[in-house]
Length: 88
Image (tube, rainbow, N blue to C red):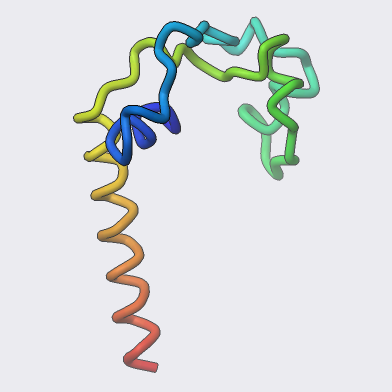
């Protein structure tokens, strides 16, 4: 989650007392917000279409460890992609 990533980068930037859950199940989304999650091709939906507070999921479950894992995966993919581009 984005919250986990921010916790891993700098936990002082996350005010945990303000975290609240948003939509946590498909049936909680509007039909327009549900479409890109269930059909192809997908279409962009702004966060305010997911839930009244703009949150998709429950950021209270975010952890530093999860953030480190996500960031590690992103970095590994970027490094792999960069190496591939250098070979061209």
